[in-house]
Image (cartoon, rainbow, N blue to C red; front, side, top):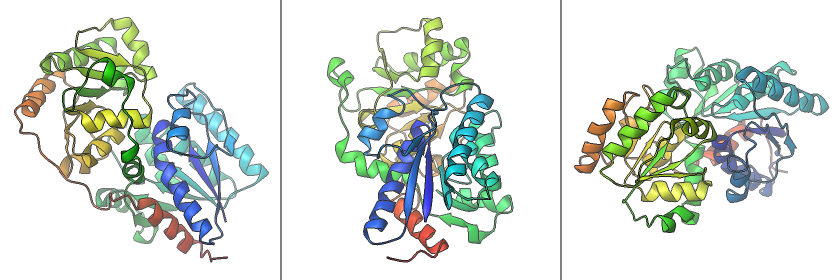
Length: 368
């Protein structure tokens, strides 16, 4: 059996690493399962891509489609054309796509149009309800043509059932991102900013912002960051800056004594900061999952979330995008009244093993 594993952006790499490891484990046990790792090139900057292959011990891609940047349509088109050419040379038996980035949607479409190749979507069924997010479109389109749905929560299962997906195609397995987190925790690495700024455990806030609704408008970005700085009671605010956000920051001139800007950090360095932070304030879905598992208070600057379990079970709270919601949240944090939270069901580090074993059952693979 030949499986294509698609990765194109930073969150993908975190999610595919344990799947590859699980396949390798089954192959060593004699299972007739092989894979091609296809890097679409959606993220081509080393900090957004290359470092993750090194740190997470992901093998070099078998193919790099080198899609690069461009508008949503340009990038989608480049990925589809590149992946279609690969499939024409040698089709696979199953295309595994993960998450909700452009590469996820583009490769699932190309696979289904190429001899109806089966598609498995890892992290299927999550929904924010926010159709202004490109990721929501990607999820909806991908799930509309997926064959096998691997889910992170019962909420995701329910979303799929509402759209008419039968239970025999839905597999509640947990969260591959958390597989990677548990494996890499012992290897978390202190970044240079720790010594440089004399940071201490729970003595700083870590912030990330990259959603268009928060960063594409300079005035809005200025309001949010200014309010975070004011509410942090002088505590250092560490801000690894996403390339999208960096462009806008250049025009706003935001500066404060306790605002510390850094380049994007590697996985091990960034999660070292999350694990030791007083709190995280972010608009990233994946970071809310990692903060939940590490029991770190998390504030999300979005009006909706596709990961509600991080709020109902975990340490995350949805603040919305109104800057006025930031100060009360920080007051709650500093008063010691933030919820402790727990870990969602099946987020146990064994998700990828469950996925690969289920695929072997679906395709009736035998030990050699």
